[in-house]
Amino acid sequence: MGSGAKFSDVANPRPVVRVGTSGQTGCVEWSDMIVSTRGGTAGAKGIEWNLATTSGPPSGMWDVHVRIGGFAGTNLQLSQCPTFPTSTNVVRKECIAAYMSMHITSSAQGLYQENCWLWVADHDLEDPQYRQITVFAGRGLLIESTNGRIWLSASGVEHHVLYQYQLSSTTNIYMGQIQTETPYFQPNPPATIPFSPVAAIKDPDFVADCKDLTGGPPCEMAWGLRVLGSQNITIFGAGLYSFFNNYSDSCCQPESGTECQDRIFDIRDVSSRAKVSGLETYALNTIGTVRMITRYGTDVAFAKDNTAGFVDTVAVYHHG
Image 1 (cartoon, rainbow, N blue to C red):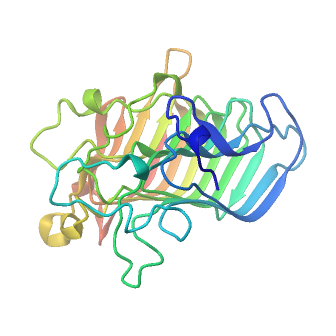
Image 2 (cartoon, rainbow, N blue to C red):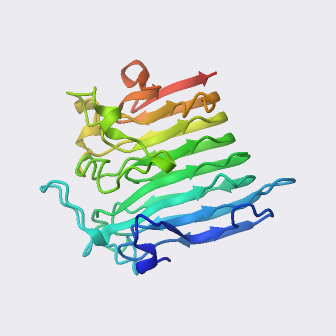
């Protein structure tokens, strides 16, 4: 658990757990641990993975979870971080609890994850009624590994403000059965609050992305998945879910058209040398989203054309 002043500077993020340093090689096997924060720690990264496993079997993580807030000892529970559905854009500084849950850096490679969950609390686990709370963490899982060779099996990332998964200038990634949820409080406040976008890690620019979308459900809400300038990506089963607006789940009900947010899956090139290619997506399932896939700023798959019961499903999407 990270706490205190060293983890509180959003301009100078630091990891609670660092695995390897940049340029270090080797192999690590890690299982059955929870990484968390205590109180207002806006500069905390849950896990930073720098280690490169360059040959043989990859390093591995099994049942290692980042859990931000919502349990005893975090100082991020109902009494500190209640909901404010009848007020506008309320942010308590002491409830800004993480900069990012996990960062697989450019130097890292060769990592297998199984059943690892990155969760920002939406309710107080200690409360008998499991009442909802408002805790802010900026980013979910950022993968920037230059050489890749990363496997995610049964992976979940939920309730981060800007995005849940972001693959940036990486390669050779397998994502099997991934799952996301948009923060329950959005769009109050929207995804532009309280974290300012950081260009160095290619944060989304919601002002630019949403300027032409008016009149529909909110656009300034967290991306479930972003693929930026990356190659050889296989996604085998994805559930990108948006159930709430301002802590109300009425937006995802069939009678309201199951429209909680505008977009959820973003694909774009980074530069002329870092283009998306070899992206294969099988069984993409969304809930509460109007536009299922956005490519280079243009929406190419819509929920209304792919309804499959409560979820909307695209069986296969290939990006060459």
